[in-house]
Length: 466
Image (cartoon, rainbow, N blue to C red; front, side, top):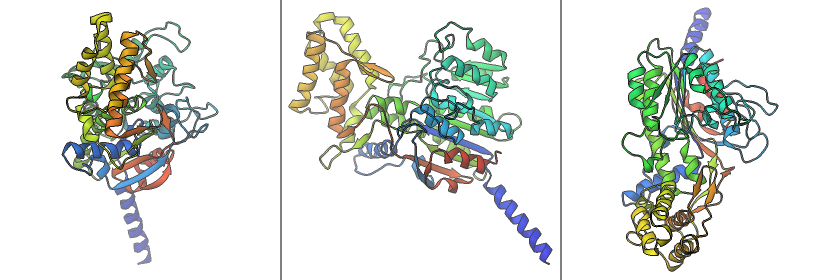
């Protein structure tokens, strides 16, 4: 009888462990997406509906919720490569490192562990495939700016699916020397390269391993911002759908898929709130693809959503007990495209651009004056910048990590933040907590407060990677 009870207990424990094991893992990383980026997006959505409160994003309704610290091995404020490495490997490192510890030793990522465990593996992003966060999952280089060398690590990892905007330095080494194009090297390693979703659909059925990038002529550094998207532009949701379809074809032993919403960070570097919130919504749309898969395989699927760090020091409120997030809906384009439109106006009219011309553009793109009344001080800010850059012709572009902006566009963005009553403490990263959300097999592991290095360790535990 006692022996029978031991056998029964063993069977029950084995069954419980198996029930928690995740055959399919989705790992979403919103680059720069702190707590206020998420909370602000939900309040922004509610105000569009004419009410105060929140309209929940899908991922914020996941049952397991946590917060994570993000400091690197060398500083309380991390960069994306050190944070990406922490989220990929569970090891702290110095700012700038890709898949290496602070002694420059190679460290194994959770994606590499998944591959060794027999899973298919995908690494995807809305920015370039060789950018810091995706690179941390497959590459091992001492500096994130070694884009060519990072790309050469891609076939060495032998993952099944990669996707993103493109590659930043396909023919130039870190020391600025010309080198053989990475594309033939990648193809010789057995990868099929698809340019755009239609090309992917044609080629994917016969491909063993695949890389999906944008069509020729598109910006290889990233997909367009959601707020700027045109018909035919590739989206993060389409990338996620493509990854799932590719990773589940043939023998299905399960998969690990990392999806990065990389341009949340870029918009935060620019302190462009409307573009930030639309990028968070865009990542939520990609998460919806994963959630539909989860609903078909609820006992075998784990979805984890987090961020590598917060960017911008986003503050929801600037003094008065008010927010006016609904105003942001009047912004029709990102700050980047507004800047381009102002440059185009300058080129078209030369020194003959009038204040009325500039006002008309700001009415069209930002809703100023027509939909959004401006204070005397706000109009003076815009008029003074117009005088400086168009009348006196002293044009000093504002530079952030990912953009160079016409001064009038930068001022318009500041006015929009004032109207919405949003504050920014930085044009860079901060040391704030980042949120963690999880649903599915083993999701309880992700509740609570912990360091970001715990996330890949817990994923590996739940998925059974050694």
